Image (cartoon, rainbow, N blue to C red):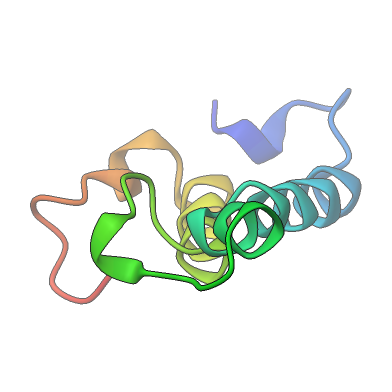
Length: 74
């Protein structure tokens, strides 16, 4: 069974909330709200855009799709 096969989960709703959360907790957004400038070289968890991308990858492909060390094009 994959994540999307679970009848109690609405993938559209999960996806929308997950993407919004990814943006909100991205290092770029956090730095933007707490510092004068955004400095990507200090990020530890990635931009909101990348977090959103990996959330969608996992939602659509399952945990095996999220191996960031082995994917050809993240």
